[in-house]
Length: 289
Image 1 (cartoon, rainbow, N blue to C red):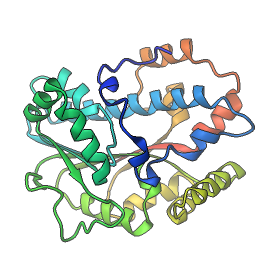
Image 2: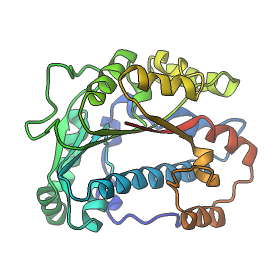
Image 3: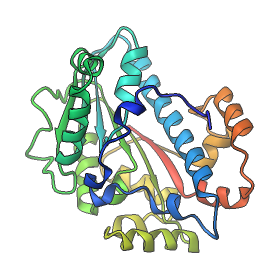
């Protein structure tokens, strides 16, 4: 469709996704939609907006700490290529540690792909990339460290992209409480909220079909409930944006630049726009400090 270009994707394209945890399935609403919604197009639009906005958060973090030595932690990183894309373009590279966390089967497969490419091996070594096998649903954040080189005192950006919705509520609380306790941290999360409408209830039912405990999802009846979750866990400032805010440009943080939105509107016009609006209002980007 030509919305974005990522030369690293083909290097991970043949990863065996059947080893990915059952909770790594694409968010069910993106897969199923409602009333025959144009799922492939909606998925592309949603992925473009999500990726572009999170990339913007990363750039803003790196610019803010241009003179610092920083860390980035990616929870449930999967086969994401963000490290390689950023390491290739951000010079000088200020990241003392880029920590990708996922289940052992996922980190093992990704590391194999890196080991099979001299270019990726070199980038990972020079850019301080660390793949860490951790089950986020049961990790004890109070007593364990994710990696010997992780320094809690350094400015840290945490990315949680489509992962918190699949975790038990107590695991979510542990993650948020741990990172909010760091002296300099920014937490960026992308996940859906249940809301109170039929659309959200169907999302919850789909999660149950995938064997996911939907308690943490159902309690998110609106943005205020989501913000309160972060604040209850120690974050002082919480900013929430819907996908629709990102698409229309009503996002005051300008996480999706005008040229990117123009590109999207030119190439991805949605015939079923009302249904897209319904979907987009259920997906949120959270920026917490």
